[in-house]
Length: 441
Image 1 (cartoon, one colour):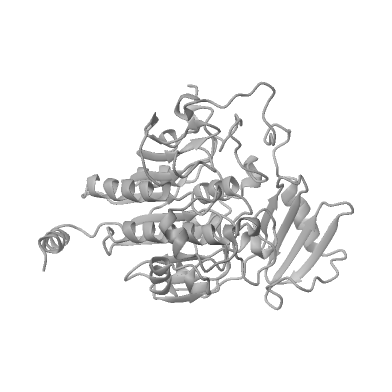
Image 2 (spheres, helix red, strand yellow):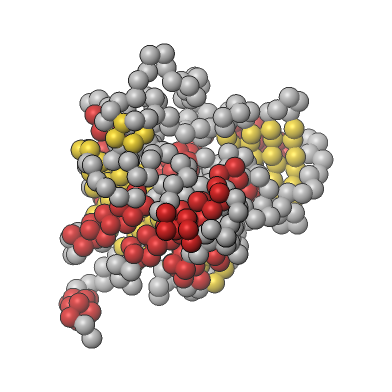
């Protein structure tokens, strides 16, 4: 027995059982088939090991875009309720995740957890009250925008790389630096307290940039975008391997992508229809799993689960009694995942998006049925039985399906006003040279 293991063992014997540590790893734009355990060509041995020794969530849904998914994860609520459902937080945006929303790290910190976010925030940066340090996180390292340069850490020619509100200039590939910081924080934390670590990597989101050696590794892939994308996934997997090697057995790891993969950037969603920024299965059904040694058996779960279920489910796993400020949409599915209760049908799972095309698209999954409505010219409404037709190849006549009325009710929940989405910069807007200096008090 090593000295470290001896100390851990004797410490465990001397103290009451500590609540489990929680690590949430979010990949960015990772497609359904971009992991080895789903048959992808990328080499993802670390992700595969965690998935195969954990519980694979094969019916897990996220939102079609980045910021909506992140807001749903941290609030346990559908983002249509607070106006962050259709698009991402742009660099010029003055909005963010509303302060009326209570976030997951706040609940965990109130329960005695140390909390950290290491990675991509993308939930508001114009006001200090919108930043991680004001939303329940003790420690923040990473960037506030999406789509930063992996090597220079710039967004629109301004540095967007910081630690607790102060910009830092470090040499290195962003994915590697995030893993290094996570390990540093894990080693430096108070070992007498449990922790919640939120690790939202920016990989493999564009810009398509990867270490040259990894691009060379995938030279057999003819498509240059696909080749670089695969290299980025490989780098992500290596980073996850480094971090998880630092974890002890009393740690629950949840992993997911924030949305389906963008095919134009080289992602592969397998047989699922379409991809990122759509409400078809390829845009919202994502690779996900929970690894919880001694708590969950390894295997596969087909329990339908959405990103807003993560908060109440992990809180239950940590035996944290929630006192939500607002009613949650998410359900505690820990009993279903552990096998203590049978799977339950899910009703009224709503998704929406308004990508760069400006054409809104909606979806509602209700049991095995799914209604997709696209506001094209003319509008198109498609009804699918996802159990029988998971690839959405054969739309059925929607007619006056009751799902349409449920969909309308969800759409009507969006807060009134047009100030939530600004797809183009405001007149005269100029990107800052230092993104840590943009937030006002």
